[in-house]
Structures are given as structure tokens and as C-alpha cells.
Image 1: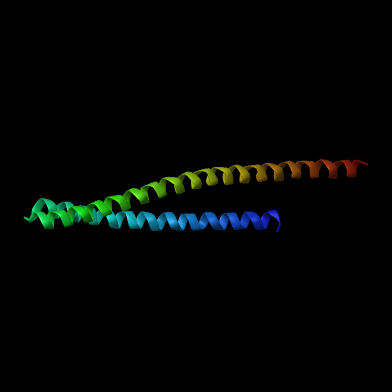
Image 2 (image 1 turned 120 degrees about the vertical axis):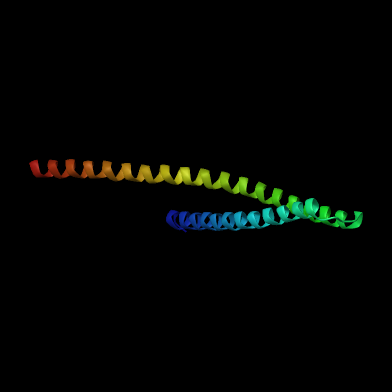
Length: 115
């Protein structure tokens, strides 16, 4: 496997991370809505202790899920930010190398022409 293939696989992995991030954000929004629904139930509905306990238990599970998603998003964002920064640096370096190669090529061609 050459470097280009390896970089291609790494880029594919980062694309997968971006998809995962988008899915987690969607899931977080869904959970936030459910949490909000639970708060409204607690606020607006008269319930007995058993019912309140069940709603709170459900709320606790949702809050834990949201916290897990937030932790995953923080990790993914950290990885993606670093990758995007390094990719931009790599692209800039390649551009610089191409510019330098063109200058060197022109100088060599001028030397050949002038003998």
C-alpha cells in the first residue's frame, strides 16, 4: 500500500466520523425533545408517586444518553478539527512545492536555452 492509498483510507475514516457526528447531532436533538416532553409532563400533569418515579427514571436515562452523546461529539470534534487543520496545512505545502517546482523548471529551461 502506498502513501496515497493510506491517505485515502484515512480520509474515508474521517468522512465516516463526519457522518457519525451528523447522526449523533440528530440523535441529540431527538433526545432533547424527549427530555423537554418529560419536563412538561412533570410540570403539567398531576401524578402519583409511582408515576412520577417512572417519569423521572425515564428522564434520568435520557439525560445519561445525552451526556454520552455530548462526550462523543466533543471527542469527534477534537479529532476532526485537528485533521482539518493538518489537511489545510498539507494542501498549502503541496501548493508551495508546486510553485517552487515551476520556478525551478523555468530556471532550468532558461539555463538550457542559454547554454
